[in-house]
Amino acid sequence: MQARSGPFFHLLKATFSHLHNDHIRAWRPVLAASPSLFLRVNFDSEYLQDVQDSSFDPADCEALHFAHAYHAGFGPAVVAPDYGGVLITEMSLPPSTARSISGTANSRVNNASIITRLDCYGNSMLICGDMEQDGWEWVLQHSAFNADWRALVSNIDVLVAPHHGHSSAFSADLMNLARPRVVLVSVVGGDDSVDCRYSSAEFVSGITINGDTYRCMTTRRYGSLGLRISPPDTGSWIGRRTWLHF
Image 1 (cartoon, rainbow, N blue to C red):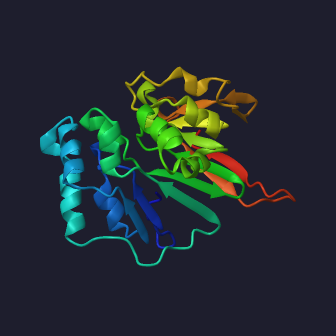
Image 2 (tube, rainbow, N blue to C red; image 1 turned 120 degrees about the horizontal axis):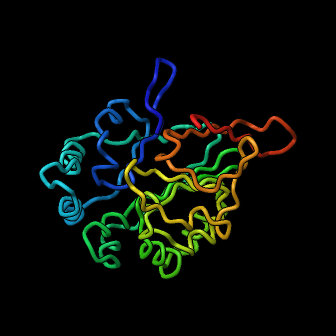
């Protein structure tokens, strides 16, 4: 998501992968920016109960306020905006299916995450929400739509690790299909639980910045990370990747 930052910028699309507090805490200012297209998990009452049951403080459950506001009338535009050469593909498990394959309330919510793939000038990024290992196993091996899922996650340049890099979400199936150049992990400052396999040459080829090779980059270490993909400036159809705030 890109928030409105002046009169010439507009939020084209907002996706809330799932409704845990750490993913929707800022939903009010995001929607106040009037995104042209808005996507959220197709929640039902059982899903909302699972969200509340898996919240650190059930009394502070943003999902209930979000759901109330959604049913009160806000929603997406009728026509999808033009993303200027960026292809956005998104898939998710229905909450009812996630409930059938997951044990805890927390896992049931996580495994219904919306997974987003961005393709731009020959570069690809996969944003994995909080889907956990049993969810990946289901969609990539057992789902009737596994061919579509496998296509979604294959041949990735930049992978945003599922579930903040926790071991509970590491999937060898996912990594063997994605074969990312680099893994980005959104993780809080005091969390040391990032799975070491995300920095393994077995799964990640690495990128070179100023002569150093990086396979896994965490917000805990590098702070805010930005990636700009420019149109090709040579005969190649691959656009240039520029890392920001590094």
